[in-house]
Every structure is written in C-alpha cells, then in structure tokens.
Image (cartoon, rainbow over all chains, first blue to last red; front, side):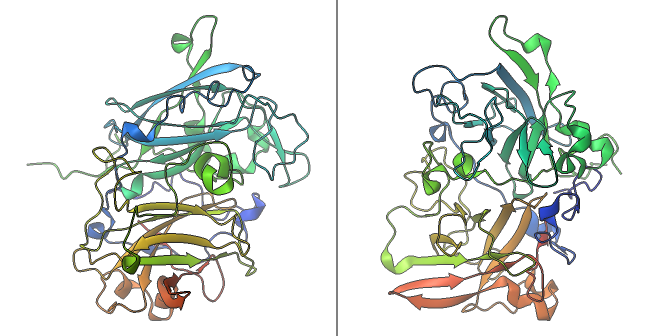
Length: 228
Length: 197
C-alpha cells in the first residue's frame, strides 16, 4: 500500500491547535515493511445499516422535523488511482443547525433540537458512491483560544478495505469565513485544504426540498507494478 | 513517480464528541452501535482474554476522550473477511472492536476477545488504531503478549531494544479472568512506538 501523502496530511504536532502539544508522539514512527502492512479490514454488509441511518433529518425525530437547512451530501470514495471502493463504511456525526452537539459534555449555550441527534452511517454502493441527508451544522465555539469558533463541519469516519484505509476527517462548506481563523483546518498544508471542502452541487439539488453538496474521499492506493 | 495520482483526502482530528456517533451504546446515547468492545459472541469462558489499559498524555495524565479500535486474527491466524454472509451480531468471532476511554472511572479501555494465533510467522499480536481530540491523524500500533515467544517477530526486531517493551502487554490474573495490560504513552520516557503503516 502506498504511504500516507505528507503533502496533504497534517502533522501530529501543530502548536496552534493546543491539545496536540501533549497528545502527539515525539519520536519518529516505525516504518513497517510492505508485507506487514497489507492487512485487509472486514467488509460490512447491509445488515449493519439501519433504515434511516443515512437520514439525519429522520433518524431521531420525536415530535416533528429538525430545524435548519436540509441538505443532501453525496460523494464517491476511491483510492488515489481513481478506483471506486465499494462497501466502505462511513460513519458521520455533527452539531445541529445552532452549532450545538448532543454530547453530554458539550455545554455551549445554544439550543438542542429535540428532533435531531446528528449521527448516521452508510455503506458505499458498487460505484463507490454514498448519499446522506442532514441539516447544515452551525459554527461552534471551542476553548482553543479567545473567541475560537470551528467552521461548519461534518465529522467523517471511514473504514475501507485495508488497514491503511482508516480515515477520520471533517467535511467543510465552501466560502466559510472561519477558515482563516481555524487551526484545525489550517494544520493541513495550504494547497490540500480545498480537499476537505465540499462542492456545492446545483445539479444534485432536489427542487423545493434540499440543497446538495458533493464530497469525494480519496484513500491510499496500492501501486501496481506495470507489466512489460 | 506517478503524478497522475489523485491527492489523498487530509485527515482531521476526531474531536471530543465522537461518542454518540461511533460508540453510542457504550456512552448511553440514543443511537445504535455496530462496532463495540466484545469481539466474540457466546465464547467459551476458557478461551477469553481481556485487553485493558490507559492512554496517557505528555504530562502523564490519563486521556478520557480517546477512542481505541483493535483488529486481529483468530486463533488459527486468520482474519475475518467480513460480515456480509453472517452479520456482525451473529458471527462467533468478529475480529474488530472499538471502545472509548470515557466511561470507565479510571479512563481505561477494555476489550473482551480471544487469543490471536500466529499470522505468517509473526508473533501473536493485535493491531491497534487510536484516535483522540488533539490528534490530527490516525495512530497505529501493535499489542504483543509477554507470555508469547516474540524474539523472532519481523516487526519487533526493527524496534530499538529499549523501546520494545512499549509494545508488549503484561498478563495479569484477576477474578479468575486473564487480562493483558497495555498502556499507551503519547510522550515521555515510555513513549509507545507508533507505526508508519
């Protein structure tokens, strides 16, 4: 399997994101030989996915619809050679439209939405594609520095076919004014940051129902030695 | 050098609030969990082992918001192919586990599983994947067992001798159960060896 691309990945230590200072390894990683890193991960079946797992506007309703802008997010998961990856497990979680997380330790003074939990999961199809419906998450203050706010984002956890396909990342929205102030976003090398930003997709937009965004995910690939 | 490759999607931190999404049942949220900390369904008591430990930060403090995943082979050294034919809820050995450090009073992770066998001449081991707030990228390491023959393991021999112990879990018997204790140190004199997979 190809290495992680240091041109697109953040470092472990990024001082502006304060909690990395005590939580990043200080010693170089041990390079694992090729034959020891081709470990396959399990393939999940549809039995793992519940009926409304990919619809966050429905999966936690109690007495109505969640508040906020309904959006559809779609994309393709592929490796860096463009090969679509099917049956990849994607798990997502996010704040509600007011920027409030349901997590018990979250104490930000913004309202909870009784009809929104903010968690979901899905598998990619035979073309490597996924789709989910949700409410656009709001910005959220955090304690990293004075007046720190996270840009609107959806958390993604991806389990692909091989152990090198384990990715946790965040999807952002185009034109967010908070990008220039967010150290987590900026930990990624400048030219690679756009890879985390969804593209507004007018063609995918469902008239009178939901705006659409497109977010592709590129995982590590396996270099194939060409035949002579 | 293949310049036609697509750029890999960058990693970002898992953040402090993954629990209700990834480990909902463990933390008592109203959502399902598909990966949890028992890797076995209806195991024989005598085959069970428990893997437990803490994650420590650079000040030696326990980390209460980490998420640990483990993935390992069965006693014959075979990895589970998947849960398509047999759902994860019914398969006798799942091979995959996930646990957060936020529910235990001492912030420990705990897994219930069976001993892995040898895979292609490697000493028995568990692959461990670690995420937490303050970590911007995935962290990989391995757990070996102190009651196994590890001297010829092809990965362990590459580790500086004074750091090898950071990858070896200690067997402890408690309450009639077999525990393997494996602490993870992010920094300091006992810093765990992390792998560039």
